[in-house]
Image 1 (cartoon, rainbow, N blue to C red):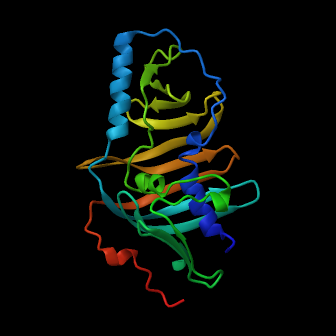
Image 2 (image 1 turned 90 degrees about the horizontal axis):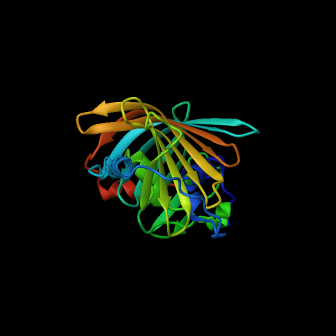
Length: 261
């Protein structure tokens, strides 16, 4: 089995941190729900549902940007270019000084890793929505990665929503999954746009934080274009999208690897 490079590790990081809250075995420890105003609960539920359904009309995208991954040991920064189609097709290339160094393609049947520099041999993982457990020891889904590059918010399914009683500004919404005790906390800015998402396990331990640092307004809606993600190992990923095209026609040939290596 090929050893993952920095590019595949970066890609795994991009995909894995979005679903960590679904990977834990229930321990039976759940937080006590505070007493809240049912009318405000209805408003919180509506705002959260709006966030979860935002940009669902975007089924394909092309774009460019920067990906910066910070760990305790070092910082890696790459230019990125991608084409993605919901729910499971993507081609993303990492570049340094304008030169491609790694391309990752998901076709909906497999994911292929290709080094333009010969750092490793081409290899593939066969799956419709790949489980990367053999690489990072937790199952991850390709569909989560594609969603964020389509401009969608990673708000999970919920069956309870309420404003934080300690926040009089009504800008903090707690979302609960009653069937497993897991929680997400959404934070809204002054324009009622999401600027933070925190996911916690059923013991209320923080799993990851997403901070939306900047939006860009298009005629079809608002797209997060600068996103900071921090995982439980204190790794920090900053995605800075410099160009975003919604719903472009993308031919299947884009997801066919034609390099000679």
